[in-house]
Image (cartoon, rainbow, N blue to C red; front, side):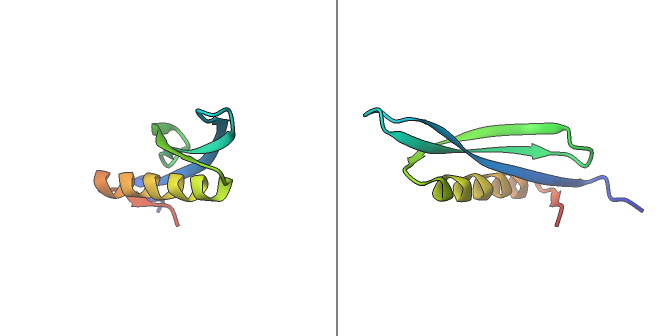
Length: 75
């Protein structure tokens, strides 16, 4: 039997230009339900020079939000 209470986080780093015109990345995540429908999305407020830090923050923010919502995640 399939569990329809599972959600997943799709994390990404969004490239944009910082205040001084430099290329920076910002965390962004979407929370999807069991059929892939988006139920929430958010973008972080911190700028990172490297893509990995922004991605890691996006993943952490998304999972933190899931915990706050009290839902299960897809493994």
